[in-house]
Image 1 (spheres, rainbow, N blue to C red):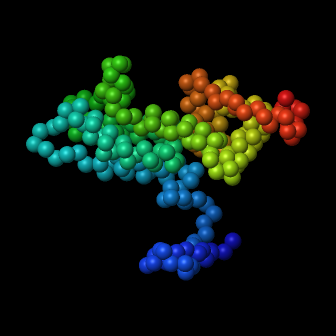
Image 2 (image 1 turned 180 degrees about the horizontal axis):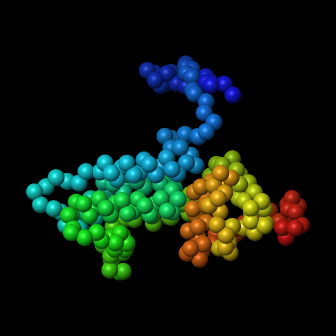
Image 3 (image 1 turned 180 degrees about the vertical axis):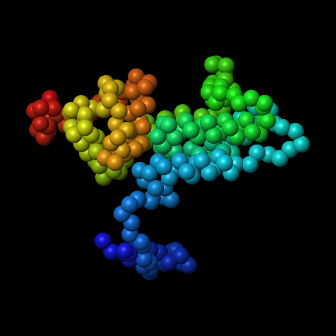
Length: 232
């Protein structure tokens, strides 16, 4: 592959002009960067979110804020910035839980408690005697499942077709021709992240732990004659 390719673009000084300009783009083969997000690279995404948490500055006031105020500040000023990152590229569940512990550590350092509290108390809902702080781990679980559904039902047919091809390969090549999304999978696919989208692997882990499944309700393909008999 060439080290650079020339791509057409609009003139930044006159975006409404019909004239095209060309500029070189570096060709990379070890990662794919889209909308400033490295696709299928949860490690790079984890590093970005971790840096957001470490660099977050609490308000500098004469007195410490109460937990209720901290909860609102973190939700509006920090978690609102983390959510888009998770939407574009969910993390592994272990990495998301590590970010929860880091966030709890930042709260602990701000409040100056003499003891280190359990991070689950911070993120548990009020009904479970917690403080109901926004959990990165739970947001990550939700975004992984929503992303999987969005891929399989994408409004752009090319993306939707590629997602369904990936699911078909996963079903037949790695799961003995049984859908991995229907909640009956007992094995882990964590070692298949070089073959499968890492976000999909996370989504299946969440579905398995919650005892949920995603059913394929459109069975019209059975009448097309393109289905192998061994899948019926």
